[in-house]
Length: 185
Image (cartoon, rainbow, N blue to C red; front, side):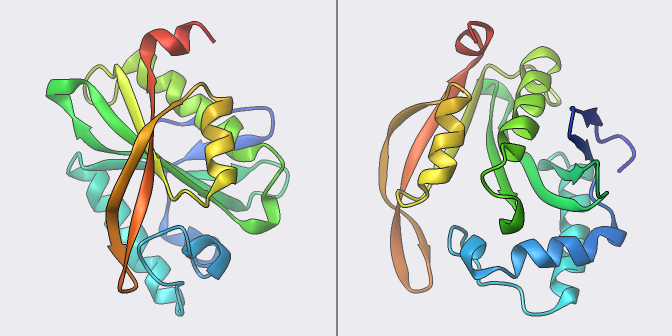
């Protein structure tokens, strides 16, 4: 995981996620207010966070995804994560994802962190050049959509019944950011 690029902003450090981060990761993924936007139930055991960290490491090693810990500099706490996955080298595209500990909502941390990894993706690429970054949200996740539009993403449409979890079908809003649009920011 030492090859995960590192970034620093005025308030944050972005780095690889390590086994020692399990407690902070558990705190994020065990929160029902966060888990409701994902296709899995809230974590109930610390071991689930450790398992997730192992999977994140494996995804990176196998070029499936890259996920960063969002670390608040002042406290040293992992307050969230952000990632790129669904790499499509032939199309020069990938998808963006992120989450944040509820105690840190509405402070601009996700926007600050994601801005750094977007800049990296467009300037350096992720295993290959990136031209398009996609993102999906549940329609009721207005906070996430606000972050995306603040960063220049445009809503392309709604994918009806795209997700299926908890015995229910879920529509997903589709957003994208193209490299030329980013350079105009």
